[in-house]
Image (cartoon, rainbow, N blue to C red; front, top):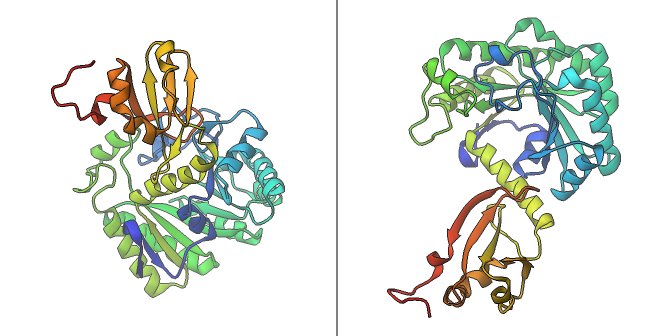
Length: 358
């Protein structure tokens, strides 16, 4: 068993999809919010406002056209896509259409994997998905009655594996051992075990089930990693498939890496990409005639607001303050809506002691 950064664990290897996720190269294509199992999956992490809504997102961007999907993939320099939901197999033709769209634009090596709870999986949907260009299917189901669908997917030429939450407790561990043995028996390639996470949408349910956060995390469930390690030890000894434990911290890292790829392509003239994948800039507010007196190397004047390069903003904070102007340093997501993550007022960068404005 190999220990990787961020607490990840791996036995023998991992799927191509996981490799690209670690590089931040996977477009997250949320194909629909519809799923009939929300009430029976207490650990589901999907936000309440996406649940049972037939909406489409490419990363954080709501999609209304095929061109927007291609644009988002281009902006982040995607190397592949992960089709998720909700339950994507309920919209198999839509998933196949978008998979084909991406393959035609970016080439046959553009890797596409799909997550499913198996409800909509049958010979018809597998044929549709295969013809659309889906390469890999990750099954998430505890119900043994659906396990034969994994074998069916193998028959259709997909790379097949399972992706399950690592839930602490003997009953869950025993069920995962059974699944691991089944995957090995049918010739599947891998199982991914995700660290169980608290989210706003599942927190109350998980707490009511007796789960608690890990002492060093507000997100990860205590004992989840330990349970995953037991399963991977069993897998290593008893099977020949690959196993991977994906920690909660890796999800954050994946988003950061994806943002870094996008930030380089979407940064405006006054914005600077950071090592965290975010964008920073300075914002100065005041009368337009005063703002025009400030000559910044990189800046855009928008009425009574001047947006400028972050380093210049910090270096000239004293000058801006003395002119009676206000401002802040702003850090935003590299998304279209530029969601603000943090901001620091102009005063933060001024070493003026008890001095007053001139």
